Length: 140
Image (cartoon, rainbow, N blue to C red; front, side, top):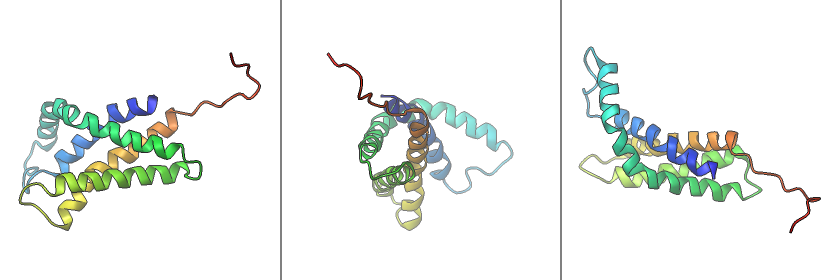
């Protein structure tokens, strides 16, 4: 259960941050108060990040949970596979919108899914340890 909470809490925040950074038009970050502008826009967009990113983050968390139950897949490979599924999903979802299409846009929008999914999977690996089954325990 912690795994899903980690994905739902961390994924939309990091994904929204990278969507803000990578999806900004050319020249948007020019100027003197770049950090102030970044925090102002991030503060305004955080509720929308969670509104529109909550369900996709849980879906990617479910992919990570499914991969967790395959014994042949180690933690590192699980993180990479989870990131690749998120990369494909966001590249298709965001990369096909609007007039901006091409390899660069698919790559940038794919990173918006890859980075938070991989980071959330790593955090879930660190903090959501599966409980060991005690074979000597008496079950009712």
